[in-house]
Image (cartoon, rainbow, N blue to C red; front, side):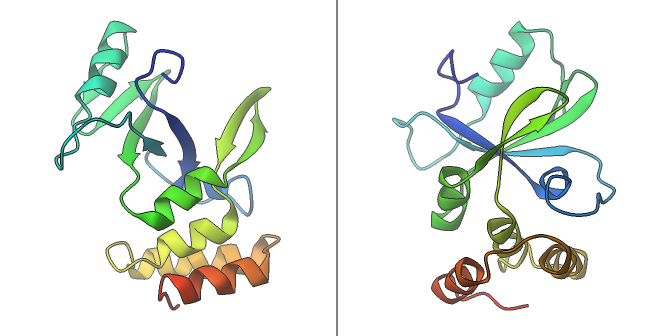
Length: 150
């Protein structure tokens, strides 16, 4: 998708990203934060992603694209925190494939955002903080700058 300029950048987020940092947790789909090419207006459209998927034989199912049997949800970066999460993502190996993954400190912060802060996500943030190798200074900086709490 990057090579074909459908997206500018990406990073795996959500429960699948936790897999790289802590104990796996059940999830339905793979969340992928993306930077879309600029030039659009205030309304974000994922039509280029769905068109790319269809042209490559990946069917859309509601808000997901089924890629190799896995439901994938593409989430445009919605604020500065999400932008930083993508920009600071690290390369990890998954079954011999290199993928960009959101760092655990950013996963925690994303789980604690007001629009996402559900009991389940607060639990995930707490579990991630306890079981992953966390850069505590970075986490505290994120919590302070983005006014987030557990």
